[in-house]
Image (cartoon, rainbow, N blue to C red; front, side):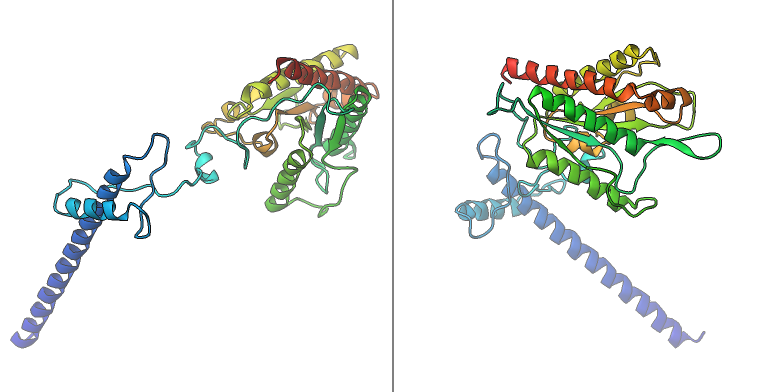
Length: 343
C-alpha cells in the first residue's frame, strides 16, 4: 500500500473515532440532563399528599412554574445516577401479575370483595352460577373401555352434575345459572388456545352479569398414572375473597366425601388445593374461572376418569344425584353462614 492511501485510511479512522466519541458524549450529556430534570420533578411532587401517585407535570399543570424552577436548580446540581419517574395511575399489567409482581390476583374490574348475599333477595335466597367444565366441542377427560370405546366423558359428567345441583338449589329457593346448556357447539376437534380462553372468560362474565353470590366450576379429573383417584377441590387464595374461597372449597370437598361414602365408595380424599401454591406459580392462580370471578369461587374435580374404579363410580346411577344433594347443601350452608355474619 502506498503512503498516500495509507494516510487517507488513517485519517478516515481518526475522523470516525472522533464522530463516535462526540455522539457518545452528546448522548451522555443529554441523558444526565434529562435525569436531573426528572429528579427535580420527583422532588417537586414528593410533597403530594400521602397515598397519591406522583405524575410528571406538563406545562399546562398549575404547578408548572414550581416544576420549572426545580428543574433549573437540578440542572446545576450533579447527580450520581439517573432517576426514573413512574408516571400515571396505571394498574399492574396482567403479564406482570403472572410473574409475581402483584400477588393479589385481583379479579379484573373489581373494586374489593363482593358483599355477602342478603338473607332473602325478594323471593330468592341467593344467586348461584354453576360452571360445568368443557363441552362446546371439548369432551375433556374420557374413560375408555378395553375395546377402545368409551362409557363417559368429563363434559357429560360435568353437565349432569351441574343440572342436578341446580335442581337441588332451586328447590331451596336459589336462582341458579349454568354457563352452558347441553353439549354446545364447538370446532369438533382439539380446541385452539384462543377458543378455550375466550370461553373461560365468557363463563366469568356470566357471574358478573347476574350479580352472583357464589360460583362453582364442576370438572372431572385425568392423569397419566391410572392408579390416582379421588375427589379434590381447588380455590384461589391469592384473591380478594381468598378466605371465603377456602371455606367454600372445604365445604364442597367434604360434601363429595360424604356423598361417595353414602354409596359405599371410599377413594382417597385428595383434599382442597390452593391454586398458586400447588402450581408453584409465584403467587399467581392459574385457573381463570376461580381467579377472575369476583365472588367466592371453587373448582370441584369429581373423580378421575383415567381411573377405572372412579369412572365406574361416575357411571353408577346413584353417584351424581348423591353428589348433587351434598354439594348443594354445602353451597347453601356456605351462603347462609355468610349472610349470618353480615359480611
